Length: 448
Image (cartoon, rainbow, N blue to C red; front, side, top):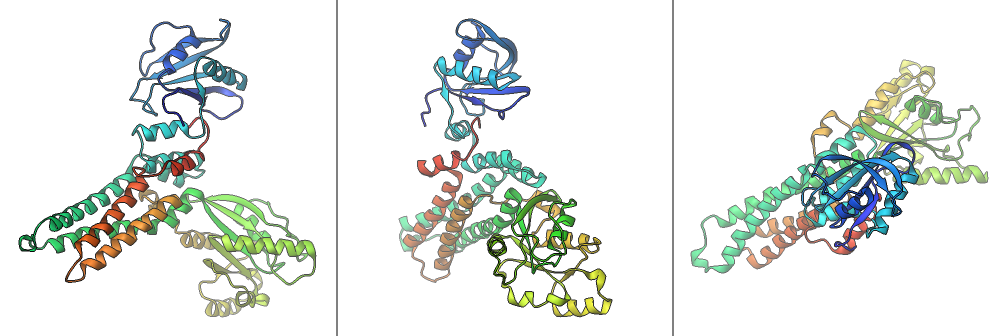
């Protein structure tokens, strides 16, 4: 990526609409916009200006509104011009083409945000949350991404960093003086700072799973033997007839996916083929796909009825699982009580009548840790953040173990604390390699 040139891209999705926005960023942004608008005077900073757009032959092709953001007070930290034109793809392409002809170039995916990062407008944690804001499809994921973009997660990491720096300063002081001049209680003070940093970092690493679910959504797979009512339950949880329902065993031969929002969080439901031994080739492939879905699920609804209770014993699910007894409308209270006494945390439902569905939904939310309080917390949301945070926690844990020894090796302690410090800088992007940066921003959409 070249950071001294001027880039351009559509900032709104392709298609027809009331308006579209073309974004230009770089030191030539204002001059290029002036040429397209045939305006000789400078644009007023952060002021909407109505203009006519012209091609290089001085032929007008649209009316538009120009907003100019003077460096460094812009999204990228550079001069930025945003042209709001009529929402016609032909007009958008024309503006982009005219900009390129006048010295600009097409922006690469994520290049506007990458420039914002390079120019210190965002740290890497905030930059990653930009993509999450754009891709989020639930209320809770948008709330979480907004808080991270506002800097809440970065502030937590900086507080942890302060504790590590404070501990390291004590260690470096001890290394620079003789043993006779040691500060009283210095080891205890170092231990307190390291323990505090470790506790907060541990909380962040433990938050990753919930943050991942909030950000990307949770996958819930309905599994069980044929003709157990999986498709009926699938439709009931969705409140729509999405999956084919039949009394014939083996009707579902492929995975059927759909999504629903529970308390502001996206849940991806999957109906699967009934698990059984079969020689039929197509059904066998459906069962194989069902097994693959089960392996990657965040939660499995393991359906059975009184006649197929053995499915819980013969099917080994390594994922969190909710046993679901179906067809409860056909059983006596005594039969249901017997099953509940023998199978822990079993939920009794009738997928046909809807009985017990509300209870099952609440159990699903509880199992996925969907709570009203989750919107008030801040989580790690990317695998990159999680992996580095674990490295930081491991270094802090090793440092704490050293401090518990009566004769601490301050040189080794210094190395561990510096490793922890480097890990936080990697999360924030201060010491991240260009290859990692390019990989992160290449996953953004063009224009952002």
